[in-house]
Length: 156
Image (cartoon, rainbow, N blue to C red; front, side, top):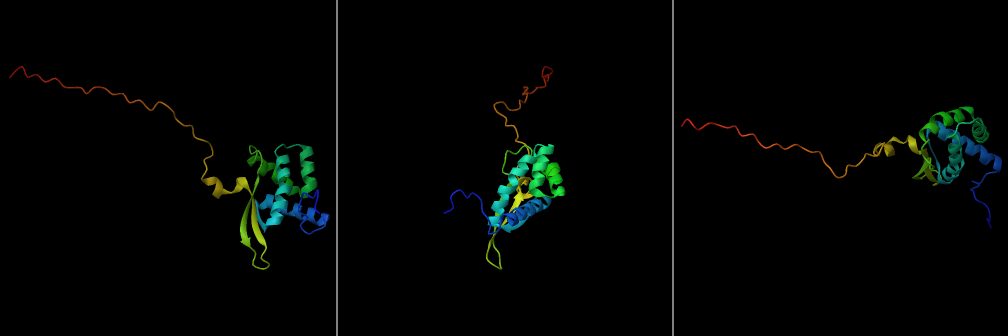
């Protein structure tokens, strides 16, 4: 029975799992997308999304919490500087998992996990700001009656 077991153990001991997820999260922050198995991608999503939420508020306390999980100073710096600025207005859902098919060697389900705001293909079609819609009036064009030149036919 698996009562109260909320996360995937990924077939590893605790220390190995935490180290692996920390390394994968640092790679995701550095490269903005990585290829891995579907199970690891889902576990990484649960691991990294709270860290991105913490990075939206740049305080010493939040930096120390994130550093305790990631263990790489460069990754923490990039997370708080570049990534947090891009996702500042997003209320959650910072990563996207795209399934890629099966791996040739062992037929494992593969997936690509990426930071949502860094994919140009998905964001290119969407406008940055919503255009305001016009309602009611259209442009008025002044219509003036045609000017008729008066010709004098009195002489004839």
